Length: 178
Image (cartoon, rainbow, N blue to C red; front, side, top):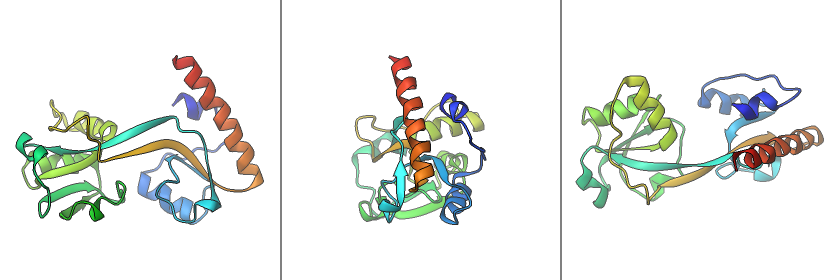
């Protein structure tokens, strides 16, 4: 939040991720955060800031034995709109897309799916929201996907200056963390 507060000449809209993506696609906003150009088509149309941090997505299971088994043909829940590095091309499972991480976590808790895929910070937040005491099992050494949390803007002169300023703020924040 420190990063966002330091951005000058910005009008901030806090909206759900799927809505932010639609607004960005329709050019209703110049920039989105957190974002990454890693999965975007036509990358040359965009400019990305330095990442604030890297976040990791994992496969979470209720039954620890599943961590060492193939998930092919299993039921896996994930949040709608997230591709996790084209996971569907790597694990041929039955995917259930839900609107929130809370619903994804509840599906696993109620054993309606065999596994879930989520970013660790998002799942921790969902866990707290629904009052769940323990995270499902996951292998911290084997993230399924990693993503930089950065700001992505349409490439133009004004946004290049904006990203340059954002990068200065990010550098200062990272220096302050050390």
